[in-house]
Image (cartoon, rainbow, N blue to C red):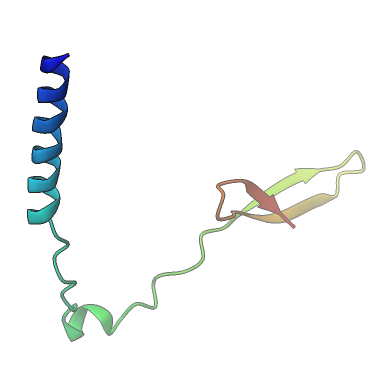
Length: 73
């Protein structure tokens, strides 16, 4: 019993010491040259295409929603 209490106390002290010293670093701003040309960033999407029995091609635009599921329209 004494060992368990001692182990919990030591674990608590370590947790307090680590959480007190570990802080998030401030976010540094990007240089103007990097943020000037962000036009190449586009919405990630693709097309799913298939042919029906009469030879016509059908395409849908697909993407992943915020939960990771594939959505097509």
